[in-house]
Image 1 (cartoon, rainbow, N blue to C red):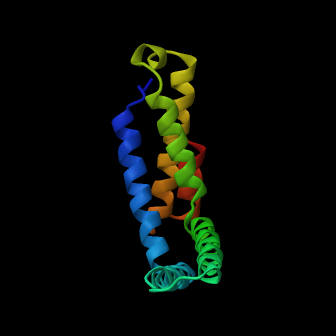
Image 2: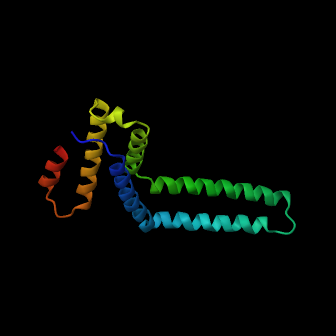
Image 3: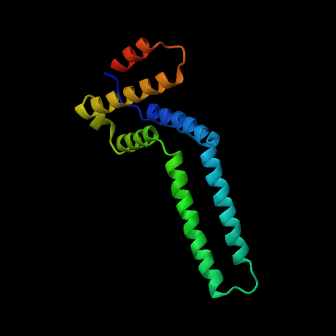
Length: 141
């Protein structure tokens, strides 16, 4: 039986996070949203730096800030990854446990199965030289 190693999970998480971040940076929709956020934040600064601000300006700032928040939520949706979230949750669950709670226990075995499944999925997605049957065999373990 393999033992759950937080370092292994941390490395898998960092690798997957780096890969997902690169995907987002290359995503044209994410770039459009970032540009829109920058534009809206520039408008907010322009209104805040105005010498004589009126009540209408404060209302405009509030409306624009709500727009920025909405754009950020949309950016999170575009840039989020289920795999990354799943790995982060698993990492947090394991970090909350002590070694004696994981080594040789059913909980440790379940975590180990989940980790190996995520590692295999990551390896399958990264390797282009595996045939479909090899990928299937790897997943079935």
